[in-house]
Amino acid sequence: MWVVGLDMNEASSRTIGKTKLVLMQGDITRQSTDAIVNAANSGLMGGGGVDGAIHRAGGPAIKEECKQIVAKIGRLDTGKAVITTGGNLLSKYVIHTVGPIWHGGGHGEPDLLASAYRECLKLATERKLRSVSFPSISTGAYGYPVAEAAEIALKTVVSFLRSVSTTLEEVRFVLFDLGTYRVYSSALDRLEGKT
Ligand code: ADP
Image 1 (spheres, rainbow, N blue to C red):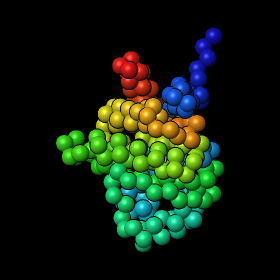
Image 2 (image 1 turned 30 degrees about the vertical axis):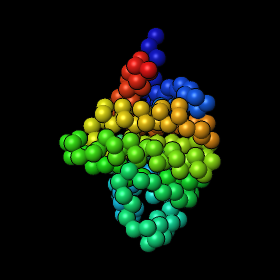
Image 3 (image 1 turned 180 degrees about the vertical axis):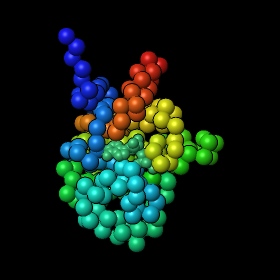
């Protein structure tokens, strides 16, 4: 008999240092990690994709805090991160970061993408958070090729977890579609093969 798991989301996990690294297919707005990461834009005023979904699910308190941040520090530079309340979300906090827009790869995109992940992990550690969920930053409207972005995302997280003492017990990648999940999953296999 065939058992077709079409309604089953795929997931996998390993341990890096003391931290569990999880890859799963799913909706980041439904995660109960201490924080979820928003692939925001510099204006921090919401938008499409995961940004819109997070603001819709979290309610107006998130945008209110974003406005205050922009009033204080101006637009958020690419590769940087800030933290706000999670509003009505299950997560207590949202970490907003700005990934690079893909312009062909020769405009500092890899370093800026790595920086976006690293700044979020630093912020989560400074706040002594135990768990954080990431979406696939820059691979939607910002056009970053998924395979290249996945390699950078995973390399950056793995090297952070190996080299920095962190309160994080779990780092979760929540990939919206199965195709993206599979690309991240093979990128992690390749990364582990190399190390
Ligand atoms: P960017 O502007 O950084 O490219 P997008 O939001 O357009 O950000 O896309 C980033 C990734 O987030 C894409 O893979 C998209 O499919 C995914 N995404 C969209 N909605 C959600 C969600 N609710 N949970 C997780 N990932 C999501």
